[in-house]
Image (cartoon, rainbow, N blue to C red; front, side, top):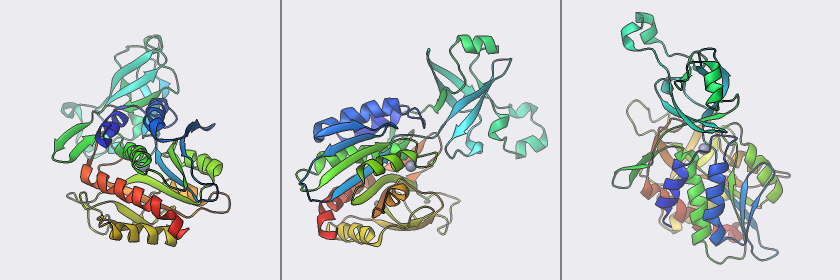
Length: 347
Ligand SMILES: [Zn+2]
């Protein structure tokens, strides 16, 4: 299976934080042919193990399976659903979105209600409604009816969005943050071939709410080197200044030097830069992103794990649809595989 097909099926699946099951099933299926063992830990992280020699280093590569979304908080008497956000969602992008509610009786489509412009007051037009003023309309008419349709407090709510090719090598889709990381994990396990080291390809849970799955999976594995595969903000769009984001789509993977949660281990950064240069893979250095990745937790495991991040520049992340360049993806895979093979030289 080509990485584009892997990405397409992972992107179309639902994996709202805490309900990663559909993505987990796919990840297990995709990595199985390339590993000696597929495990699932108690929190639901998927761990594919490619056994190596006994004294060789252990390397963990991880992409997170979860995506931003919401869950049902309350149901009003009139049958409207108020929700809680999971992960960093900008309230401005919520009104009028189509959503899917995953109930025990099946998937219910709905829309995040918004007041038509005709009846908005002048001040209302200028102001963004906060998420707690919004509601989801599933056409139920009453609380009892909504409950009969299957809605329960705590049901997860995901955005709708289909993987679509829009131009040469450019695709848009849901949850590229971080299904692209998951797809790179699968592809790296596939391409790495025989090595002495033991490689762990991990799909983590609950990254968007505080890097939780990475905390437990890294504890269980306690690797010698950790690499998170994720997306980063591509700032090459109107209205973004270079100082806010210098990373551009189509210019190769981004290597974070420091973000809000991690100072990339100098040896890991050196290994990534030298590997990219030796293999003539384009890369971009990045510093100062306010967010962080699973690498931040891997780094703090037990006595510490030298960790780093390889990110695919992605536009419009943490919205229902984002965009990336497949050439950046290919370069990220190449760098990941080449770096894994270089680990014994550096560690
Ligand atoms: Zn992410």
